[in-house]
Image (cartoon, rainbow, N blue to C red):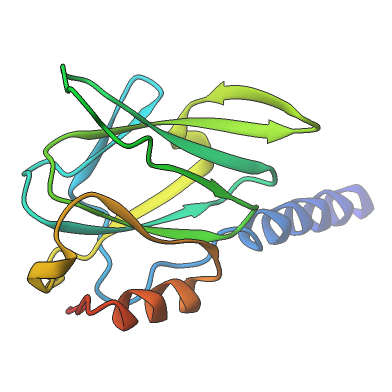
Length: 160
């Protein structure tokens, strides 16, 4: 019986450490509007202006880098770095916007499956001012509340 209690305590400890990195999605943010292609995160299934929250749920620094999937003359790199448990917000008006993910540890960078390190949700009813359209990082590498406040300060209305 003692080993059963010890095992149960170990499992509870493991669950507590994992959940300390994963913060729940805010009200109105839904697991929709994105997917994966191999190891890559693919945002914006429709091509309409969209707003996404992305959390690094790993214990390492994660870097997201845009991957250009079609022939384009000029395209900004759109890279973001997130510390463990931090969030980012990304706005997109381009269909199937691709990111690859890298874990950065001790000056070494390794490509990883985005599914393994990120939690993603979309505000499907977000409203943007005309000046806020396009593809850009709204805010990066901050706690969830600060990311949402930054979006509101930039005139993005997160409806639920």
